[in-house]
Image (cartoon, rainbow, N blue to C red; front, side):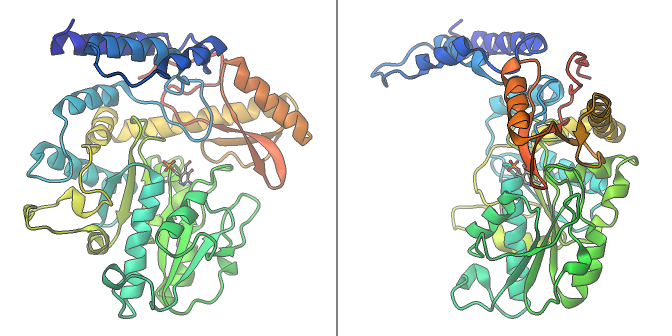
Length: 442
Ligand SMILES: Cc1ncc(COP(=O)(O)O)c(C=O)c1O
């Protein structure tokens, strides 16, 4: 068992056992499993222990205290599972242990990421020349795209923000929908534009920006839109926003953390018509594509702008001739996370991605229909994979959400939507199915 081969086989066996039993276990860990986590809280020892014992301890203490979000009954936040093909690909890529940012450190990682990039542009229908960054999640994808946006709109008035920073820079206006995801604000804060400086544009009853309420624009401006409202699933009318602000030179960014995947199916793509007219996009692969965490994607139409914001040189670093992933990401060194995206797309194919999206939307509609039939008020138009349901007064809602969460059969989160407490249900995982009927993974 001490050999590397024995250790890796043991890891595979334990992983297989974990996934084989996930459908039968409580979604949330038992109190006993939580109590056992105290076993991790030990003193840092002078001497190590055999690797097999490290793995055994991880499995014995850790596995039972995980949330079974990789199964089919976790409907919280917007949480994907992980397609078996992507888990297996991750195992192999972990064994490779590649620094995925440079050809010199991993020709395989660079080539795989280049193919995943090309397939994603096709899948989302994004313009040729668009650059991508494979990052940790949509938070960093938004940040990366907004860094390019900041560079572009200030560059257009003669200011080099990469070189000179923001002190003394021309004023920059940021517009966001009133339902903007907080991670966009966080990105604006990190970029020195301020979390609270963005001007909010009024949204409609589904949380969509009302383009006619966008104020007149003058000077460097970034407009942040969203496809896939975290509560309702609704998409901003991005094309109408482009119509309104592009003539004045504004940059339009799309936060499509999960909603961008609506492009993958003819049944949902109608909601995201015209998003290819935007200047940048962010999405997650670890949500709807069902690859392991952490995997987000930023896209910037004029790829050189993302590169301008992110690339660096050093005398010890090789000069790339082709696409070099680390020229587009905040990180220099990073894991080869394009591998799982590539594996998912190769395994599913175009039709499989469409099926995955459609299946989750079907489950959301089924949830909504069942809850409505039982007399509960579904608060959103169920246009995608999100359901918001109201069970009455706030205390009643919160009590029901709490009861569901401790019950262990499935997991749904609480939210406040349009001023009322509610439960939100997100069908995003590959095995997702309303509780009681867990479908096999493909
Ligand atoms: C619309 C939207 N944007 C951004 C994010 C942040 O994504 P991540 O947690 O992958 O960084 C989320 C997460 O739920 C989201 O729904």
